[in-house]
Length: 70
Image 1 (cartoon, one colour):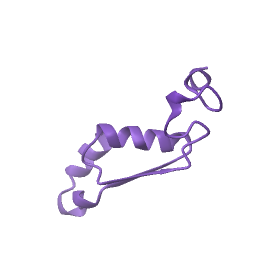
Image 2: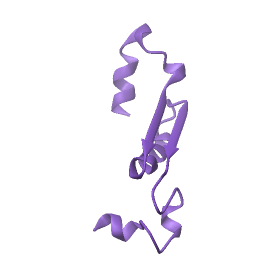
Image 3: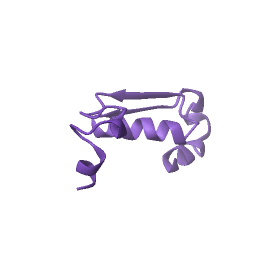
Image 4: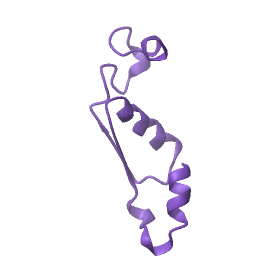
């Protein structure tokens, strides 16, 4: 969100109508989370969002929440 705040200060140098975010693996989950919380992103790309995938909290195997927290 702070990055988007900064980009808005750049005037015509940044086209805010074409703002995209991409993440891979665990940062794929982060990209999804950022897209839910920051509506100024127009496109969110989650590439290979890890063993738990986008439904991380529904799994008891793979990269689940307790394993990430450890």
